[in-house]
Length: 287
Length: 134
Image 1 (cartoon, each protein chain N blue to C red):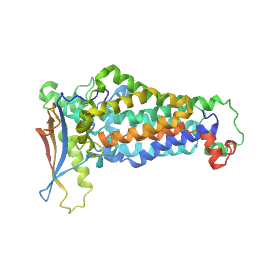
Image 2 (tube, each protein chain N blue to C red):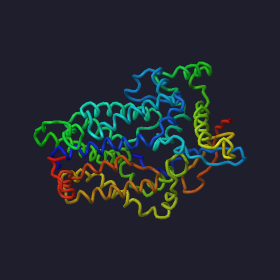
Image 3 (cartoon, one colour):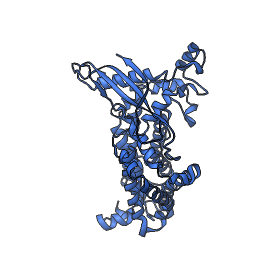
């Protein structure tokens, strides 16, 4: 388990940097062109008045939100005013993700990363790999668990996202989840329209091999159930994560559904304090 | 996704198309217009067709007015706000084209189809269409 300030600082840069890149690459003005009358605010978003949505859900309102998010996420990624910027980034991303979910469904791709933002906002993630630590004259001394605990918590959150996914499938569908028509019917459904993000048509080849597919579906169920072992058993960690990469690429090719945020967050399983010393040759204390 | 696929259950799906000034009908992928909605465009469209924004405890004032005009939520036609969504997508698409381009849209439409299920064929039984002219 990574247990020093450099590991937590790198994880902070990865999580916040992921949202920074996706914010820059997203057209907020185009999103603001959609009518607010199709919004269905969910959760705490219901507490906001419609006059707020009318002010926000237009091209200029969304551009202001984008500018605020870029500044905040840039600060939190490079570790400038980290105590404040990690919290403002969390709040702005929460607002933005809440708005997106008011348009569409509860997409769990970004949710794990949002939880990681929440963890990072209340931990000493700016003690290293940050402008703050460069500017600070005094080196902060904290017990190792102050840095190890947040990383462990984020790894547990990821493991839970897969483990609970398997449990829900078994609870809702039971053993019928292993039926030979499950994957072909689901994959074809997600390949018929042109509203998905990609246009892969491999799903239509699945009915021809459907008798073999329960094995593949069962393998993925078992993989989700054993994912928590990746936290504690380093020997099989990279096998589990490797299967995860193959799984998410296959959902893209077969169902036109992708989980980029989830995949980037696999990087929280890297032992960063060990890696920086081994490959960069820089001891943690100097970063 | 948690319930898995069920071959026996029928399903509907939609295709966004544009009618260009040159008279062609082209497919338009919404992700190229509103990339913020990655992985959720189809659910947004399904919810808009189902008039779900009219089934909230607190309605947008414009939606409240529309419900009043129709005399109740139950009287609303399916996808009563789909034309507004099509207008926004059509405008975004035309903004991406040069002013003199024959690929600019004169109309945009959302075509709904149904896969009845039961077998791996006959995926495209036409159900209905929403169309917006510019």
